[in-house]
Length: 210
Image (cartoon, rainbow, N blue to C red):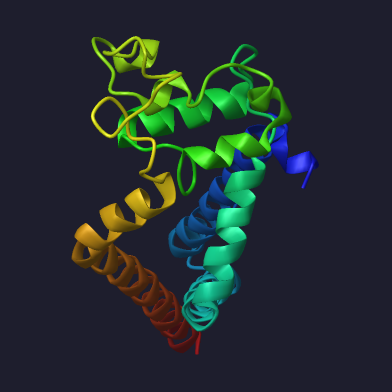
């Protein structure tokens, strides 16, 4: 867990997203070239790749549903581990990320403010909660509490200290669950349609050659 508490977690996540984007671009380019050149081989590979991607997505969704409790527990543990090096003075990339999340979502920690007690650097300070957990004024990116005593003496009226970001995010997703499901089904149907068209075009080329 020590490795994922470092700022490199964001860099590693960025590399994964870049790699995934590059792979999707190559798959799309493969389909484009296959259709342009009327190549059965390229179209066949394109269709197979789409099938693999679709199966992986369905499998991931099924596993997430089957192991919901385990997935939730591991997600919470991972998020809490990223707070372990949170410092009130020296802000690294992960700490800044948490500040922006808490300020924008109006929440504090993963479950509540007590998550910050696990950070030795935070425990050595004299604040109870970060400024980002407080009710802010002006530009929220500057993390200026509306009530100056909030970081050391938080309450329900001047902060969001008892409101966890994990439950806030889940509530946000559930509030728009129909849109989330619709987008997921829509993307799946587009992939399925692309796969069917690729195989149909591949067969048409084969029949034309004969």
